Structure formats: C-alpha cells, structure tokens
Image 1: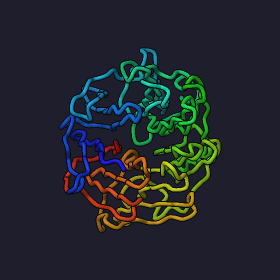
Image 2 (image 1 turned 120 degrees about the vertical axis):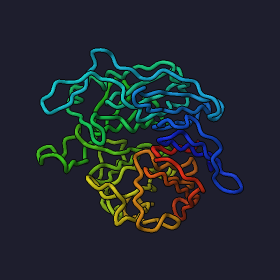
Image 3 (image 1 turned 30 degrees about the horizontal axis):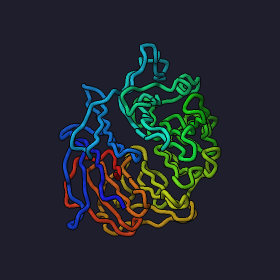
Image 4 (image 1 turned 120 degrees about the horizontal axis):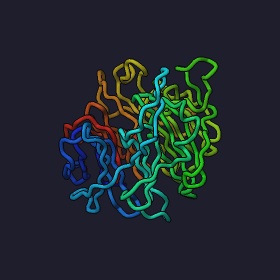
Length: 366
C-alpha cells in the first residue's frame, strides 16, 4: 500500500505520510496558494503540482525530491486566433488558459510524455516532462466543439484523461459539458464515444446528443482498461468496450448524483462513489456523508459509513477528491470543507487524520 498521500487544497499542497502513529503532515508546499491537483509520475517518481493563482494565472511545478524543492515549468498556451464559443448568441471569446484541470502521465515507453486537460476545453501534450506543450488540434478543431458548454465553470473543461496501458496511443477524455472522446493515434484524430449517456437538462430531442453530455469524472481499470466508469450529472454509467457504448447503473445508493468515482486497479467490477443531492443544493443526501461501493459491476451497492461523521455532515467530495492506491485496498476521500478520511480495507472502515485542512480539491497517492 502507498504510505504517501498528496492533498491539494485551497491553501497549499500537504504531503501526508503514514507512520506508527498514523497519518501525519510531513510538510507543505506552496503554503497559501491554491493547488488544483497533483500528479505522482509512476515512471520516474517525479511529482507535478498544478496551481491556480487567480490574477497570476495557472502555473505548473515539478519536484524530483518528493516535494521538498520545485522547479517552475511552462504551462499550456493557446494561439492568438483560438477562440471559445460562449453561447447565448454572443461572439466567441479568445481562448485563454484558466485552469489545468487534469494531468496524466503517458505510457511506460513514453518517457517525458504528459497530458494536460484544461479549461477552456483544450487537451495539451508534452514530450519533455512539461518543459513545452502542444495543443491537440485534432480535438480543438472539431466542429462539434462549438456545441460544448460549461458545467460548474463558465467554459467547458477536460477533467479526465485515461491513457490505455496496453497502447498509450489510445487516449480517452471526458469533457464537462462535451461528452467522452477517444483517440487511437496519440491525439491526432478524435471521435465522440458518449452513446448511451443521457442529459435530462436538455430538451427531449437533444437528450442523447453525445457532444453535450456532462460526465463529472471518468476512470478506467488499469488491469482491464476496456472497463470505464463515469459519474455523470444525470447518473452513473459504465462501459465494457472501451467507451463504445455506455450502460446506465441505476442501483447506486442513496443517489445516482455525485462528482467523484474511483475504480479498483485490478478488479473492473469494483468501484466507489460519493453520492449527493444535485443542482442547487449539492450536499450529501439527508446530511449524511457515505461512500457507495459495488463489487459486481453495479448490480448491487454497499453504503459505507463506519468512521465517517454522523449526520448532519455537509461535506461534498469533488471530481478529484477520491483516490484509490495501486493495491485497491487503500481509499481516501477529501471534502470541500477540509475533511479527510482514509480507509485501509476498501471503505469498510474510515479514519480521519488529526489534521484540520483547508478545502480539498484533489487527492493523489504517491
């Protein structure tokens, strides 16, 4: 099991280590700065941190000594003629990097390869450990992109990037709101693969339109990458054919709405969710924080709460706030009110480290 957890928060990157006394804060990087997410590259051990500094923009940092020192890198950049559709009959606006919303390592045989999904909806690739970035124009220039729109943010964004471990030229992404897309040639060309999803927020004649779906988060099983799970705005969906067709999973308790999803790295039938009430409320159902787990591809769900706070508890777990380690035994969830809970037995029992943290954006086992 991993004994290091990177906690990306509104006030810094907290590096937690598990020792004899439990989980402790080893050190903090970027104290006071908003850290959107972190990546621990399994190929060379490097850590990356994506920062959202407001007026000063999005920044990217790399560490080769477990977060003790950092080097600033280039960030993805749009061209002067790149634009984003804003809808409501308004003219497109210039495309400017607002947020690095996903960051993933390339294949084991692609040293230096990184993928970055951004707001406003561009996917970028680096082949030199983040020293430079290239916009994947095959996706950006898709005519269908004009129909994408923002979900939680004003602009559409790419929050999930799944690289197929069998063939790293195969990349699947999820866009809010723009559906699921797949490339089989290193990002040169793309096709939408959202069939089976539905959007109740659209008129009936566009309910199944694949390019306006709102997946909140998409994950793939490392050992069986044709199985993908999506927590969508209107439910939970699973694909067993690499995203070619999606199947609704209606049995999630206590609700099918949420933001986070995690899948067991070796067992595609096992996945975790953090249900909530949607739209204008966005709080746990009945003020009770729970985790829903399936072990049979969504046919049945266990509602796990031992060690989680008793109601009322209004902790909301966002897209990247659920992490599963490489064994599939250790699970962590972090909330927008700074709550952190860790399980060492797939969610059966949870413990909270003796820490009071800022609002948590993302968790990463390293």
